[in-house]
Image 1 (tube, rainbow, N blue to C red):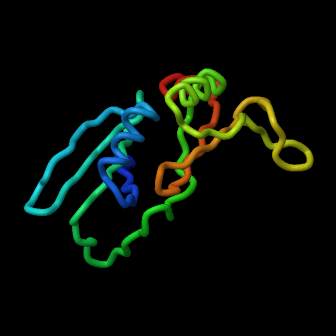
Image 2 (cartoon, rainbow, N blue to C red):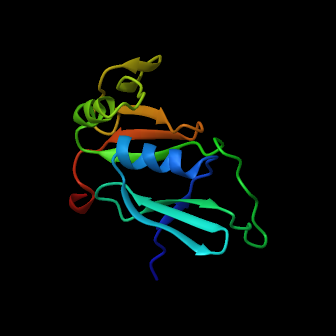
Length: 143
């Protein structure tokens, strides 16, 4: 049986502001923006080429046995690209405040690209949820 990761909830304070950031600035595709029940709004967006989406929710009660996350507390979500410098240039052109490309060196983090699987950059959404972008050697379908 496959266990596929398909949707990650991202806690935000303002759905419209977050939708604009993820769609217009980061370039995610808006899959859904709907009031699925009275007072319950769901916005689902997917990064280009990904099979996993993010969902931002308003008015939805926490599922039994789960805990709610405060906006800005989600950290470490990771995207992979095959050309980190081109991806960074695209984000900068779209107005995203993104870190320089860095790699892990002998004494910790250092500026510039590293070897295979060792080039990263990061950014935050308007609420402070943190994302890391890593350069992969090839598209997922080829690995």
